[in-house]
Every structure is written in structure tokens, then in C-alpha cells.
Length: 111
Length: 112
Image 1 (cartoon, one colour):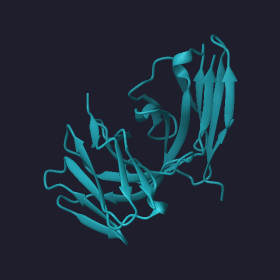
Image 2 (cartoon, one colour):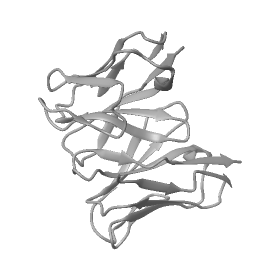
Image 3 (cartoon, chains in turn green, cyan):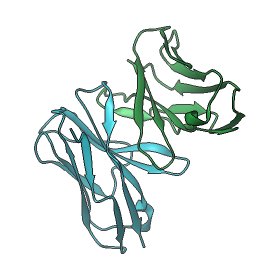
Image 4 (tube, chains in turn red, purple):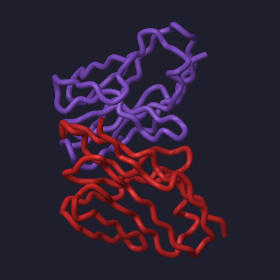
């Protein structure tokens, strides 16, 4: 079946260091979404990428969608303790009717 | 504007008991979803409803049933709970397939 894979599963950084998480799909996606979940909370939408090769920025966060629309990345510049949480990518299922989530990358930041 | 509301927030069941998790959204969204979250497994889709009147199986539907009662409400039923169903359950909705999904606060279910 269709899979959306994320690496790494866990990442610990010192505050101020950069962080990147990668997402790969076994099938071509129509779009990809990114969510953040704080410890004990629920997933919250960050962004959606639709176009091949698309790059979007939100302050210190940079999101990319691969040319083949099968992979994506989230890069955080100069991490802060507020960035702590689990970051999920999500792509459409093969029927194109629901979101399939990756397993997430859990980021911890020490000051 | 409450968004997506799930009840209950916590529940403990004995093996074999049944229960229904309730979910309601007030954003007039067409699509609704049920996910379960287990450590190291991410969010796995149980069932979804792309529009009122339709429901479809997701990745892990066994042991569950759903009802799209109306456009606002989408319930998840466990007919005979098993310890393997211990998890955190999230309901979500989106205006249409592929658009931003809004999640409820989650239901923490323990089956003993």
C-alpha cells in the first residue's frame, strides 16, 4: 500500500542549531501538508505545498516540495525551545480522498 | 467558534465493552476523519467520510465502525474493545478533500 515515510524519527539539537526533517512518498502526491503537534496536544496545520519544486517560507521555517512530487522537507533555521514537538508530513491516499500521515519527526531542543 | 469537538476526553474500558466516540465540527466542512495515534506509529487513518452520506475504510479499520450522522457529526464505534485499541483517537475535518485539516483535542482510550 501507499506509504509516507519520514526521517529522522527523533532529533535533538541545541538551541540555535538548524533542523531538517525529510518526507518521502511511495507514490506521486497531488499535494503535501505539514503539521506540528506539541507534546500532549493535537496536530496543527502549518502549510500545504501543491506545485512541483515549490518552496515556501514561514519566518524561520522553509518548506520544499520535490520536483517529482514524491518528497518534501521542512527546515528550521536557528531552532528555539518553542519549536519542540513532532512534525508530520501528510499526503493524499491513492484514491485521493484522505490524508495519510508519516510517522513524524520528534524534535527536542535544549537551551 | 469551537472548531472540532470530541467527547469524551478520557475513557477506560474493559475488554469486550463497547463505546462510541463522538465528534462534531461547526465549520460546515464536507470531509471528516478518524485517526488513531500510537507511540512511534504516527497518525493512522481508521475511517473517513469524504462527504455527508459516505464513509470509507482507511488504513486500520478492523474493530471499528463509523456513522456520518449528518454534516456536522461523525462518530466512531468500538463494538467489542480489545487492549490493542488502547490509543489516542483524533477526529479531524476539512472543507474538502486535500484542504487543511482541523483536529479535535483527542480522546485517550485505555482498554484493560
